[in-house]
Length: 282
Length: 119
Image 1 (cartoon, rainbow over the protein chains, first blue to last red):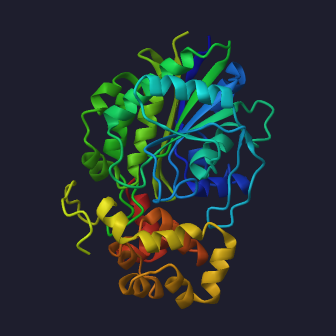
Image 2 (image 1 turned 45 degrees about the horizontal axis):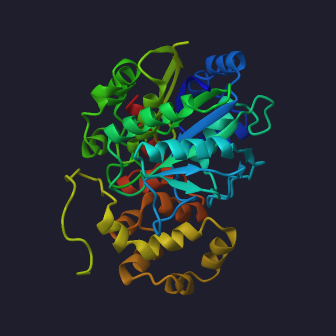
């Protein structure tokens, strides 16, 4: 049976993609952000995951308002990033894992999570930037695991509740642990932390709330399910709702996790950037 | 606009528009035009003939005016969603700090200072 090694969270700000392309790792603006990743690189090198479940939120590339799935799971042989409107370079395709995708889909629906399966799915910066951060040169990194993208809706309200996100993660964890292959899996939760791009409140960041979320997501994620969706918008900012991805990731890890590394930095672009690596008990 | 959902499902948060069913219906044409800016040919099409392009997507007068004036808050009021509007901003090479400044009455530098001040 497959084993979940752990989970990694990171912000997925588009500007990070540009900074990687320009190799601004030692630039004074970027250094405090990129300094959060060497420990993650070492952990990945030591543990060598076979599969990566990339939980992100699409920002208007893979989905539009004509059909907006609350939870969508990719089931393709490969995933391509496409032009998001800013002329970002297109990369080689990320290899998929359709047999794992369909196992997850079967298991989730059997556990009464009604998800949307996608045999074609263009992936945006929410998926790509974390891959580039964790596997430098991605997808052309020799250790690049095969990927299953999972996207949750944070574009249009109503968005899922924090409890639903955590429960989704629990069901996902059950699905992964029942995959009949001796494989090692890592789960990414991308996006966040506090930020708001739109309106007169644009630029809003909330360090205190972020710290509360970072503390609790490690050891007491159930506490965070008390936060209502409107409270999340109010305290994390309109786009800080991406914290739902962290909850989904956390749910899949089970109760016993060890924090390997954490980084938090304000600001990167308009965002409070957070990174966390949690390892599952052996 | 009597065909829009009438009930409120959210609290009021100052300076924040909750993009819900009401906004999604109101802004559909504007958001669809902006979503299609994912493709370079549509960005070029818009640049070549802004008025014709907005007409083709069926934007209403409020949406057209906001687009003409590059008025981000006006576009949001007209139902625009920031994730799609970001693609509109991309045509003019505006960063999210430029867009933040435009919405909050700050220069880009002042907006960046504001972000930094919250560290």
